[in-house]
Length: 281
Image (cartoon, rainbow, N blue to C red; front, top):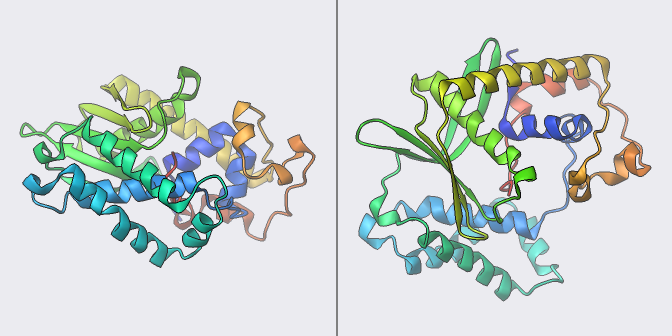
C-alpha cells in the first residue's frame, strides 16, 4: 500500500488532528450546507461553460447553465434538493439568484472568450519519496511558451491574512504535484474569489516548493504516528466555531466515537484520502 494525501486532508490535520480522524477514519460528514452546495454548482457552471465555442461563452449562457447543472448535481445526490427546500434562511429563488450573481461576478474578473484551458477539474497525482500526493485542479491554463497557470475558484470572500494560509497551502500543494509530474514549476497560482471580486496571485519558486515538500513529509510523519498510537488529539483554534463535529469533541464536552477496526489502515489507505464532494469554500 502506497499512502496518499490530498490538500484537503492535509489541511484538516494541520488545523486539528481530531478533525482529520473524524473525516478520514470515522467518515463523519456534516449536514449538507447550502453555501457548499452553491459553491459546487458555481464550479460546475464554470467548468461546463468551456464546452461552448469561445464566442458563445457569455454571461447569459453561463447563467442558463445553472438550472441544468443543478439538476445534474441533484441526480447524483438527491439529498441536495431536500436541503435546499428546508433552508429557512432563503427561498429557492433567492438561492439561485445568489449563484447567478457569483457567476456574473466571474465575468468581471476573467473573459472566458479569451481563454482555452488545457484542463478543467483535472485530477493530478504524483509520488514523492513513497507518499502519493493527489488532488483536483479547477482549471489549468497553458501559455504558448508552455508556462502553467493553476486557477482555483472560491465562491466565498477573500479571507483575512490570518486565514489565508489554508488557500495558499492548497495552491502550492497543486504546484508541487505538477512540478514533480511535468518537471515544470507553474508560473502562476491564481485564486479567484467570487464573493468579493478579488484575485490573489502567487508566483511560486523552487525554494517555496521544496519547503512545502519538507512540510508535507513532516506532517505525514505526524499522521503516521497518530495512526499507530491512536492519539488524535484536538487542537483548539478560532476555526472551531465552524466545526460540524463539536458534539464529538472533548474540547466541547463531547466524546469521540470508538476507533473503528482497522483505524490505522483507514488513516493511510490511499483510496480513502480523496477530496470532499462539495466545494471546500
